Length: 469
Image 1 (spheres, rainbow, N blue to C red):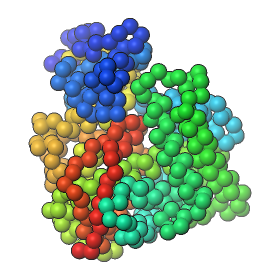
Image 2: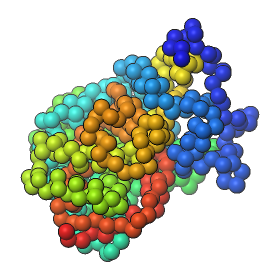
Image 3: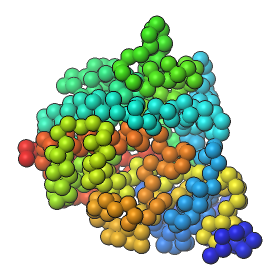
Image 4: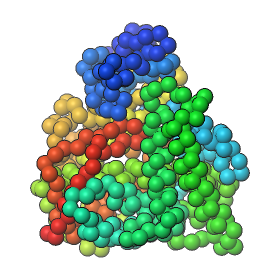
């Protein structure tokens, strides 16, 4: 297969999903007309792989992408990145911030919608604390306290309740304590009205933004659709909450609060102004809650359906009565459980990038500026990459050399990989350890699929039973 442009086939020869003028492939995603399902992209794009091969062009409403399935090609995409990795943004969030531009909302800040130097400035200010041991380690005690509160609540749930609701509370409480230094009591029997309002705002805004981004024409750009109004109202609520927290902290002569919380750190460092801090923290909390709640819920689901794996995980958890960062990082089987969970049920089906330079993928020339959508979920479900791909086998991750690189990338890759990965993984390990130390987790023998969106969600309630070992 040619690796240089001179020997590569032209871009126009890349297999293309047939479409209509202007609409592109839009009609194929409309129920009763086409066979593609926008909320099941992992199944939809697996069909495309079977029909067109590992590199595919597709255009929807004038937006063209390359779907990239081969891990070797995916590696080339990420290895070609500059220090400013570019990706297609969330247009609804970008538009919201442009309309709300003020001293408390900077549309050129944050981690989600920014590009280039603006993105790098914010990322650099946050990389230090979020990726370093001396920031994460003190928060293991906080994560442990939140996990114990979650296990208490799980023990009180009616039989076969949806565990995702409790995991959402757990993820929210973790995020607000570690990032904001604020204890809101989401896991209490009677949480405050403010706490309930913020949790509801994040859930509603997340649901709305999924419907604003894909796949139908963005009518919200011209009229206030229901989903736009829902997104705007709930994003306002959540942003105002972050504004209040930041401004209250800035008003103190000594801004530090909880030892080492992120807000205190970035205020003390002084690299970001107040609007940048507000925008960055809004992005971080918003992204953290949905993603970690999703991953933790499915980890419990898979352990409940696989008693042998659960027993191995329990034995490891019981060997670590006291949890600190060093012990958490040595719990190899629990880490493997999380990796295998996110291979089977990733938070997103793939990663968007815009190529900064010409590439050769699968023998075809791909020019700079091409929009790429890597298909990691589909690739992770192929026998040639992961033997017995549909089975939950955490053991496959215990030998790092046996798993292919650039196939399962639940936290992304490169300079724009998930900045909260270390905190999220540590929090999930602490939670799983505490749950397994206290409970046997059971479920009916029913697999649960995902609904794909900006952030995926369980297709149906994850109903589990928690009983004493």
